[in-house]
Length: 429
Ligand code: PMP
Image (cartoon, rainbow, N blue to C red; front, side, top):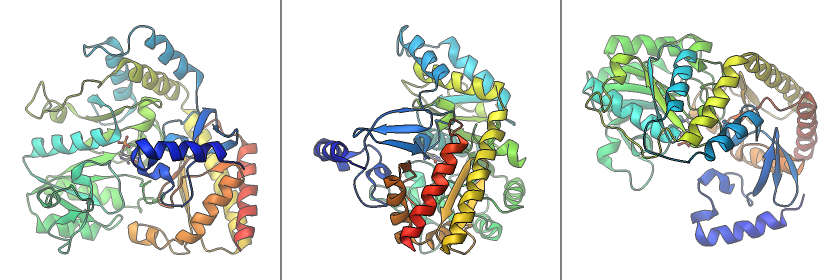
């Protein structure tokens, strides 16, 4: 494929935007080479600036669950735009989408809309701290909750006592309130809770992790966390930015039958516009301003275009819940096809999948947490990624990201993808 124009656009972008991108992973820093610039997209396909057509397996990192430029979403946005793009004054559509979201998701009475997943998680943590009157939180290594300071933390030398910043600019003061745990390791969480008695406000996690490749909670892990939270008076925050309105109407809470105290959303809930949200039962949500003392606000929060896109998207998912099983079946089909060609190629691998989240880890060992994900062969992944791109398949440009299927993908697209994987693996062997 030719990437002449993408390359020229990237060179120009780098003059004016740090690294040429507005979010780091887009720069292909994890896989090397230069990013593709997209011109437009429709359904399951991206069309780049050089006229290449690519089958898309990132779906804007999740939101485009029904495919790109989905007509009901586009119509809703265009119609709203004619009537004004922002008021900073209440609008009816905010209640409409809130009412629908509350009816779709278990265990929530009220929802507050924000502008990104980062904002949702950051606000959820502030609410939990304010509600509990405690400062510390527990997060899991490899789970991503956006780029707010409290989450940019790695395990410190005294891992049971406090974490340390993993980005310059995050202060030690902030880091000391974030404790790091291993995903799928209940004993580790219990140890942290015991060492920090009555200091932990919340445990936050991705109920199915998508930011270290796809990682599935082991049977009993989420149930165990729920129990530990109840025993220690700690709130359980599910970051469903990836899983919300993707794994099921009610997200991971519904699919895995676990009750969270606060739930964070992003991606699908905004239909591709910048939206996030966090939600909980009345008792907790009523602590938020203007009802309660915990402050949280946003000039563009509940923006009419964003709400129109989100409402169109959620309405369709609500009315056609068979979309979730259709997506899951497509992903299972891909899983089966990939298993066959990977076995034939005799390349060590592990595939993790749940619903429409899937990823191939180039290691034979079970991938259950960040450390096991890090054992994946990154050189193989890089070659695999570029090989697939050359075949016209756009995978996430990092081994630490889940693939997201969208319902516009056809079985022909999946067969094409499986054949492309076969071809690329043979060139690697
Ligand atoms: N939480 C999770 C689970 C995510 O995957 C992401 C983004 N990939 C975020 C939070 C942050 O969302 P945003 O990029 O919209 O700020």
